[in-house]
Length: 77
Image (cartoon, rainbow, N blue to C red; front, side, top):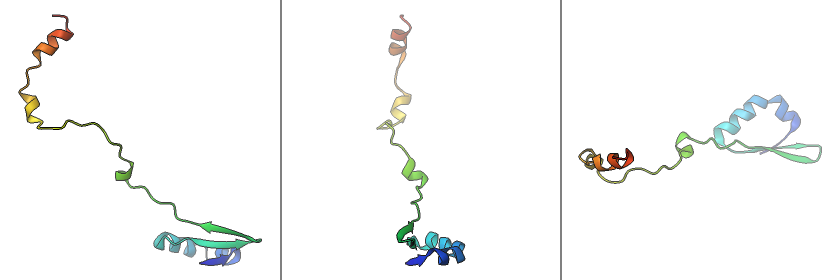
């Protein structure tokens, strides 16, 4: 859709709402130039998540592990 700057000014909020609703950009002609209003892609919270290293395996197996040898090494015992 291509419109003039005058038409944009007359219907600014309606045009902006339509761009948001449809996602279709609008071109504006002004002094021999063509400008576009394009909706920026909204990034969801899930897309911003960063991958982390996680424990793989059965978490219950950690509960019964004997770490006393490791603790003694760290304490110099």
